[in-house]
Amino acid sequence: MLYTWSSIYHSQIKEGNDYNKLRPVISIWILNENLFDNVDDFHLPFLLYNQRNNLVFSQEMAIHILQLPKWQPHKIKTEKERWVYLFKEGENVNVDDPSKILYTDEMRQAMSVLNRFSENKDNYLLYQSRLDAILLNNTYINDIAKAKKEMEIAIKKAEAEKRNAEQERKEKEQKTEEIKQIQAKLDSLILQLKEKGMEDIISEISNTK
Image 1 (cartoon, rainbow, N blue to C red):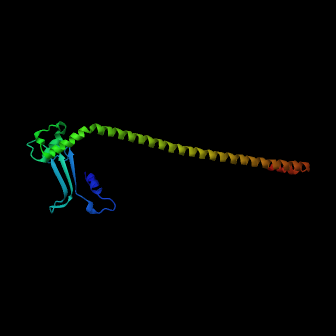
Image 2: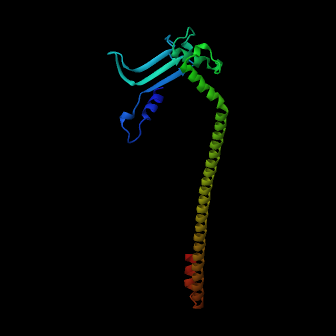
Image 3: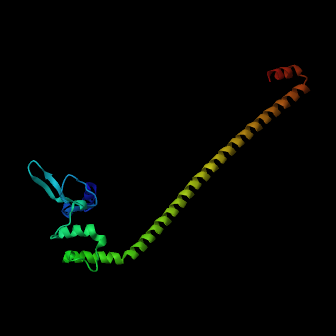
């Protein structure tokens, strides 16, 4: 409750505004269950209050809790009692022909709003259906984009591994070629030594190998 109140109060001003833009915020909570069982009152108003000195810090903040189970039907006289009656019995109220209890200007205005809401229910459901379709479509788009990104990363990784494997193959081939060249030079040297009759040197070279 406090978080909701503070969020609404804080959202009134943006960067560049001043505190004069702030207006009182009154939060009204209509509860189908009792939050405070140990009191009999169905309407509990709360303010920032200093109990010791009986001081109200500010009228800018107010939280009103209406505990519907605590309200007991009796002779309804005030608009607040009519509102509570409407909250509790709203499903059973005929907006086109309400009971005499609701024959006031304020209640007739409320009935008119409820009637418009009822007439617009199909439009609301259509809007909700379209909104769900848009959200689902956006989900598909985001999933596809994510899959494409993962595919690109996998391809780049495979290409990098392929390049590394190719580099290792070339290095191995280069070393093999170097060994072949050294061996060819050694064979050529031995052949030259044989032609010159230097078998003793060839023997030493062989023992060294």
